[in-house]
Length: 74
Image 1: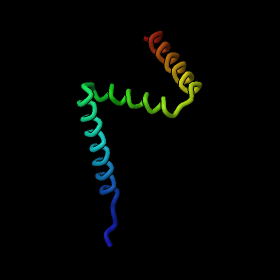
Image 2 (image 1 turned 60 degrees about the horizontal axis):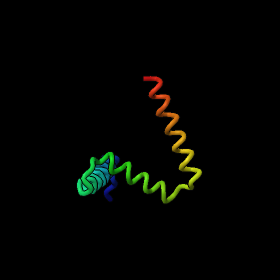
Image 3 (image 1 turned 90 degrees about the horizontal axis):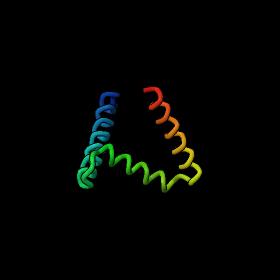
Image 4 (image 1 turned 90 degrees about the vertical axis):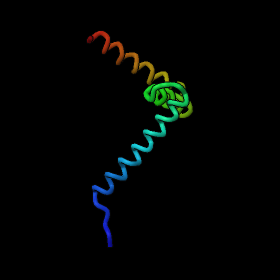
């Protein structure tokens, strides 16, 4: 009986992760944007579908607070 080792599992996880990256990269290319911008867009779209208006407002407020802290700290 052949048991999978952590190396086999790590290789499979890497391959699946890399395959997902290549898929996102191709979708971004089709949209004419960089992959980071594409992922940001997808994240926002998913958030709009799943989060309530109150949750989105809370996240936006927190993001603005963090951005202000970074700006003031720089």
